[in-house]
Image (cartoon, rainbow, N blue to C red; front, side, top):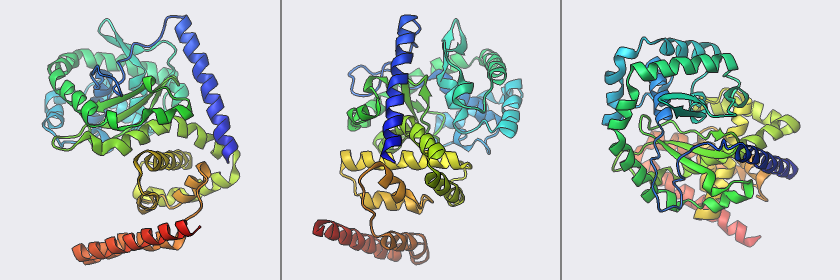
Length: 384
């Protein structure tokens, strides 16, 4: 399996260099905001086009587009009342239609958003951006028609004024993001996958709490779009989530190569999809499940290598939310020796049943079992 990893990495580096040189030579480098990682200068980590698309999908269908309909903060609760009068705008109905016919929900609007720039008060696609080549749910005709309607909605709703009025709120969250999270991520770890930390961007989405995304801009800039943390919650709580979203940018091509070229992996992902769907209904396709599996495996690797997290606990966490083959996939990207499978299954069974039935007392018992299993594993590992 390692050869697929290496091949994807080489292809990624060559593609990155080619696109970078073309953009540099033609003076069309995208005007993006400064990175919010290890820099002293804080930029606004809230992007207007991301908030705009989030609002459109909130108004279109808050039930189907649940990742865009959170109401955990005063800011989130204010959106629908302020913009309710525009809920009959043509883009809202078009969004509903595209969701029904092409499944343009969840991450599709974020891929669309990060490839937009604003010129003279209107959004347009950044030079060279073809979202339909990155996401087949969009086509050239659909994307261009959608952009026309989006700009009309943007103008009529006076969204820019709303965005300006909330700039202090955005800047406060941007500062918190920098202080609470950015300095705790080892961005240098991503060099091995062809990433330059200076091209890694973290975007906060104040309009949402639950939805997190990992789109890539033209194969050059890697984004982690994360939901905001309502005070007193800390952005540090989203360290694993942020790493996960960054990891999608290199893990997805690896998963695609394995899925295309390795029959065993492809069959494993097809058989795993129904189990994953029981816990995570937003991964309906086996290729999507494959991307999620590989991304989660690399996220675990990062946490083990950089934050001394316990491997067994991390594997067990994934097992408990439907990713029952996580250990197999983790072994494909590392020299990992399989742990005692029956231990993982036993603890998972306790976590889903005994704690549910026995309540707090069961939780204490469960904690003891987890500790015993981890101690047993560590003892066996040392004995080797």
